[in-house]
Image 1 (tube, rainbow, N blue to C red):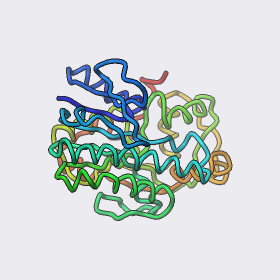
Image 2 (cartoon, rainbow, N blue to C red):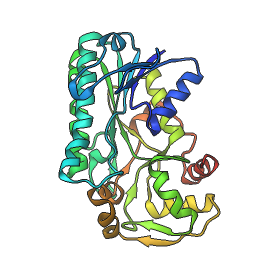
Image 3 (cartoon, one colour):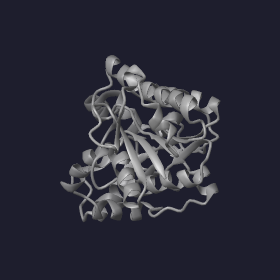
Length: 297
């Protein structure tokens, strides 16, 4: 299989690349600099520039590009960067697919932020969009893939929750606090979070390459949990005590509107993946916490 990946250096992209190459598949990483090998292809999404030959030869394109939401305060200017980085990269890839390879499978990045804060309502893929900046971003992100859809490509929108891993992403900020017994919970006690381990995230993407699905896919584990439950499971796996609760206003003071992603209640369930027959390596929080602890670095 020949797979083209944007965002290949990120947490999910690098793990997916390693998994595919280990099994003998060809992976071409889209890079925003001069390509250094045959495994890379230079592109400039802001200028809508991409090599159509690379897209034309692909069996699958995976688009994971987008500026980080949690690493900076969401000022007005950075909000524009967050949105534009996603819509530019997606439109560039979608237009290239429409022009060069409408038969390709596109795994298009998105997030559970699409649903906004909907309390304890069960969020299947049939539920419509919520409100707020993150919901608006996810809708714009997905809509930018429309040229590929119109051309007949199979497009799966990957609505991903919190990715639990032993390094990087969410874990990079959370694990040090757990390790020093400093954290018990974040935000509201009853807000539900949709989560998935990095291993299952990669397995789900590979599953969707083999069993293509057109439309949204909640890439999450079967059972959402509160942040307090997630932290408690991780603390047990690391042999630590739980520390102190961190109220929502503290998070908003420190990281601004990006805290809404951690504070919103999103009880997402993986209706599509379950229906297609996907099975999880880490279906429970206890499984996930052990996986994080075993792979921490």
